[in-house]
Image (tube, rainbow, N blue to C red; front, side):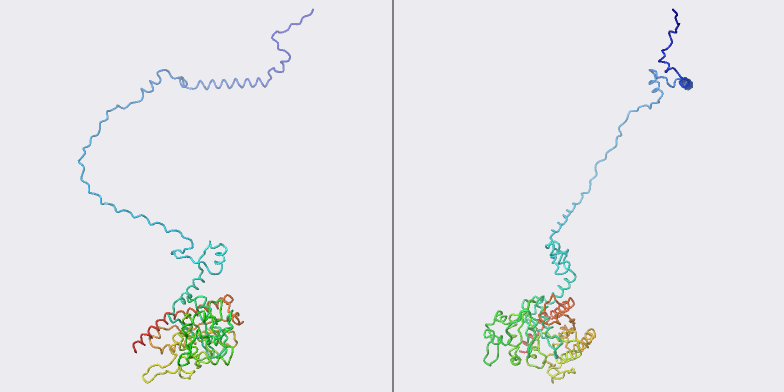
Length: 470
């Protein structure tokens, strides 16, 4: 039996795959070299660097630190002097408490006045759409309008105020101007009753400007025995039974808050109107209406026209822009200056033997208003030039006035622009007037209102002079 000698230490064949290779041997050599280098580096460290401290190390360490000697602290004793007498402190005035803030109230201006709502424009639209919660206040136009209205919101006194609207030639727009004055005063003046009287001896046209004309005229009013009575001399007088409803039963009405005593449509009957009848009508009307505007005829020498001027506080002279009406307006000024003289082309100083002025209507020149009414006619003068010319004429009259009359001066020259709504005739609707016309009419009414307080003063002076003569 043949036996094969084997090495007991030989590895199994399956482990041959794990036998070290040349790469493994090289890695092992590298590791050995690194270990040798580490050993040499460690040997270079000074001896005792890594030695653990001995039991007496702490004692050795602390004994090497020098310690300062401890000394006993002594309390510092300071001499305390006796307290000095102190000056008493004056009492401090109490500080007043700050004022309480003003209560915040809606719709108030910074000055504390009520913030009035706007009347027109975008501001009014915002106010209406917000139900009044957004109040932007009055616009500049509102403030201007309020200022004009304030000038006519003055009491003219117990006897009221009477305005005569005159011109010599027709076609200047006299009745239209009368209606515009009534509209402005009726809508804005403090007086709640504004009355117009058509005193044209011929057929009057003032009723054509009313939206609710009456079927009665001045003849029906004068025939009412509750308003008038006949005295012993046969003259018509105001009856003590006269009432405001009795008067307005006959008057035409306007939505602008004024009424009109209409002129007669019967030409024959119209000429029967006398100065006495007009005076009686005025006596009744002034009991109830503080502002009365009379539309006169074109005959300045007529008894009725002279009666109107005698009772008037102010005269409004209407001049058109056509050449003929301008000339007639200048003659109207001369009539007021010269009457009772018939000269209408020259100014005549009327004096009696004592040098006293005997002109009947000259005092009205100091407070007359010349209105240049643009009716749109061709061949017309330029309005600015007309205003300068009339102002120069009036100034020449005023230089002849006495000092008191010059103090009472309110005479002016104003313009009423051409307006399509007025040119179409018919009732005047204020909202249909152009903005320029509305402002011009308000300015005219404000100029009239400027004389309200002066009228009361003139009556007091006249009453005092009459008492002194007695």
